[in-house]
Length: 290
Image (cartoon, rainbow, N blue to C red; front, side):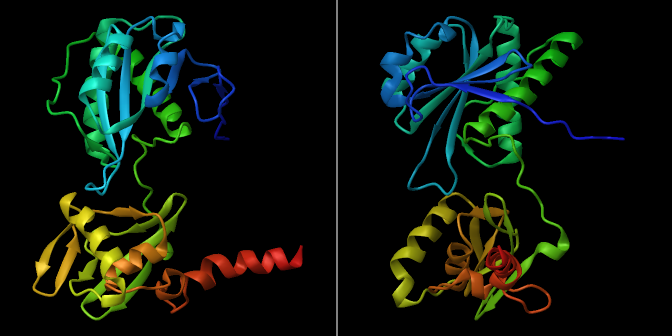
């Protein structure tokens, strides 16, 4: 009988600060991830975990971009590279350095991992890549490639555990889990998933925005358009060019309808039931019985 096995992740806080430097590892694997807040780079430079070759990720946000930002690189001198990025790149707030606890990574490992992580990050599309050049696939032997793929799978788990699901594709809900939203010149499809509310590619937004929602909706739409998520469809509509994850159902409804909206009441399933009735009401009823 097939059984999904759990994994144990250990996160060490060397300064006892939960928002400080964190060192994460899968207890049965050799890959480790060192999370370094930008404002603690000076102290982090003292860590012995930075004494070896590594692939690294710079994470940040932008008010102009719909998606979070990431830069992916590899280096044989982590301290010097992060110091340089600290001076030259403005967008990042957190670095995650990934290497081997047993110092098993070689320059060949990290060059291949850099290429593969860039390719997968771009393909999955949850973050906007800030790399201006696309690395070419370096030659590695078949055994080394297998080792790199295993390391990639493990570093992906660690990044997600640290709050950066760079390599986690957005889960596509079952057909029965989709909800729809309709209004004047607007029609959307979306689903509530673990990370927020996912709006489906092809959903239509009304161009006109109600006066009461002008500031908020305009700002959100601007980011989506600059990120290529929302594109022109007609004189009265925009269309989602790709699936997009909102923090809340109401935020998604606001963008699509062009007015303030309670997403828990506006989104409805094929039977006309609201998102609240399907997702919240059963949980509230269960709590009432406890």
